[in-house]
Length: 220
Image 1 (tube, one colour):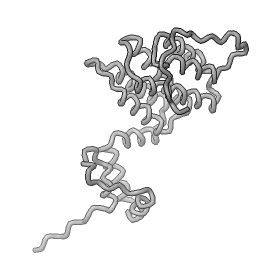
Image 2: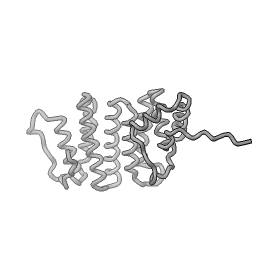
Image 3: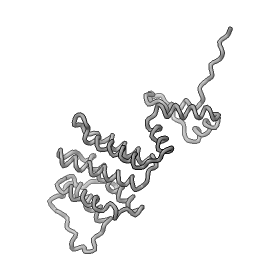
Image 4: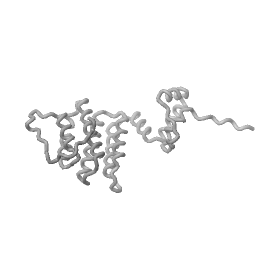
């Protein structure tokens, strides 16, 4: 008796996005239009099977659907806040993992949480980086560029969403806490703060000349 033919996998399986261990060297990624075309070929049961498989194997997909089905902004915020904190201050060892902190911030933005919490987490990223520098000493220009650009982007978002007053004290504290940090970092933060919170009396706008260092180029 001949073996019954094995059903081929759906074309969408070629994307291989359900498995994080796939070798990317020879992997071909389809565009959105091609992806939609292939998805339309699948019946409801196949689509459910595919989503379940993605949910089981991909942490990012799992978090997205968990949030989509039960959108608890605050719980998710504190989860990603911890991710950022422990990237700077790991529970084991003392290796800074800035890449992980940046990835956590990026992932949180993609989940569709409120802009207020996104701005809050961006500011926390900068605050934690500043604390790390004050605790352990100077890092490098790439590190300060990341903090400075996030500071600028957070204030830009706050102004767009009318959150500047709500976060003003924390924004100012960051500037104050960086007065002994070089690389032009403090100067950049000070000027950015003045741009978003202009003083009514310009005679009171005093820049600490002793903190001036190399100016950071952020292509503002």
